[in-house]
Length: 350
Image 1: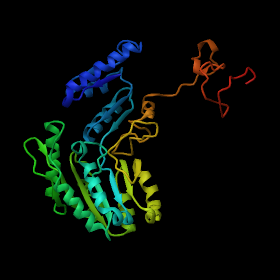
Image 2: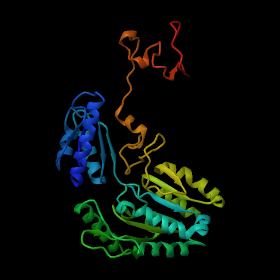
Image 3: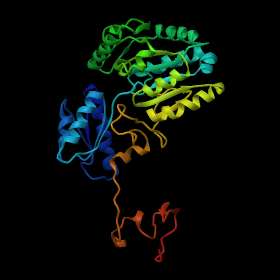
Image 4: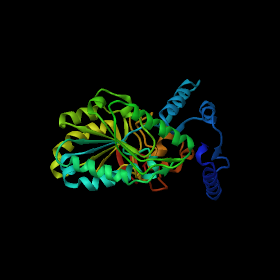
């Protein structure tokens, strides 16, 4: 394993690498099984190197696309699993909006400002149906944003990119700034809330689906159920999609669920996507441009499967088989034999 350290936290990367090296020694793994390299442009060279057989990447859409192209242009193309860009839509259905407008507003601002808004799962697009509760929700949302404190982002380039994204939103003739947080000092990012028009989202205005890394979100009001379904269909691939619904919203939620499953790797109900638990069930991935390969996950116990490939050993002598494949099943593993799951040894009559 070769890891390229992030230039924004090199000391933290070094401490982490030292801990991994100690674990390698303690576990008796081969020396050199883990390596960390520092350098601004070394990532491209690593992708080109013939000894590298697969790549995992987290970063911008531009960076991921460039590395993906390098991986495919090699004499021996290799898989590159890139996690890149998502706005992670959060949809609030009518009954939920009417029942808990104020709570939703406060929780939502806490979610999209968590960690300076630098989570790749930050809810960057809020979709709500016009109707009872919407104005209460907007008022509470603006109040929560107005009281939000500015934050220091990872490094100077991250702050610069945030400000560039904010400038692009401000320059759009049909995007309105709804609320601003407490004024930012030098080197800080101000919390911002914007509102865009649903017609622009349906018309595939690219700015409305461009991720801005930092503490802001974009609100879009939707006229009716048919328009909401059309908006979901118009969305690009996402890491997450969230539905807030009450019991009376059930039929509408049921109609949206298959659409959201086509768009995102993780669909949440009545929660917030910023938390990403490392567990067996987690799927941290999604269709392009969220990732370059929607078939896997970069978080959770299944993440290692991105770097595995199947090999069939046919008619191999028992002495050459690893214990997990031996007829006697010395590890007592649950195995699939002739279509049946079993821990039994395989008899010679098989």
